[in-house]
Length: 316
Image 1 (cartoon, rainbow, N blue to C red):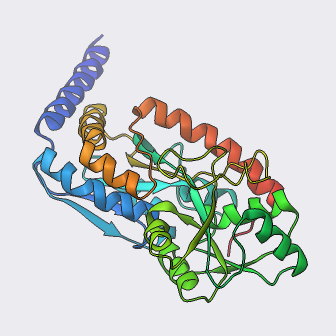
Image 2: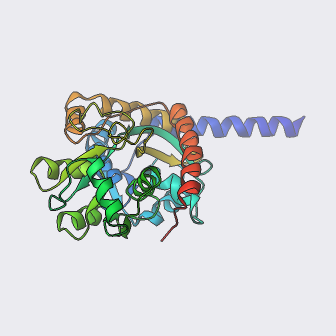
Image 3: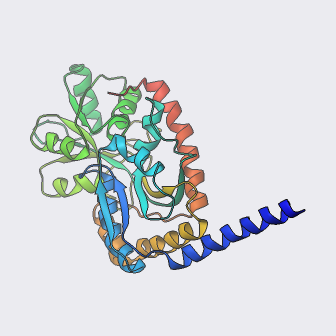
């Protein structure tokens, strides 16, 4: 009986301590770890960080790390709400192709999905094509001659190209860069012919005529890019490759802290000015609950496991 009471008392004390900790949270700056500058995750982290910091009364710092280090670094961080990650599809697809030092389902506490928006297939204007059909015809006429740029293995720029080849039965050659920013720069400088780019990174260059948009990668047109046809409606029925980005904490972060972060993040995402800014860059804000986000991740992992197997995508 004494042992039972002792354990019960200890558990209650720990729970009470966690509640008090959550009530005081945050008392120091918060770090959002994300991949190198130029990608969709860095873009979202830098948009969300200032208003989130203002709402929480503490500075929110964006900490850029090489993409392969991000998952493990945050998974091993103290689960106290002071180290978070803005990650996305790369964190789910890379483990499908190589051994990593984290488990996306076991090592993280989902907070909220920030967005799920299409990538956009963009080409350099020197490539004399204006539609997806024309691009496919050119690729068939010159197998392997067209070059598509990607960031690291397993990202949406990489798997978008793999799925495009599967859907069209053409051969295009992958040129890997260190991250999505340099990959887009490679297209702008005409080192490569095409990129399945993040909308946030590409659309400003499309507007000023430095790149040409052929289609968005979701099954339907994006509400934020209504004038850009989907690849699916351009003849590749069923084509649907959409990156997602969300914010997560290490597993075992107190639920009260996760709830506090969720509440403030959703308020940030509902701000009309921020939503308008995201929409200008072709990004559809999300803001689903932690439970919904966790379910979404599990479904996406199953879907991408099948895609990686069918395409034979490999890590660099």
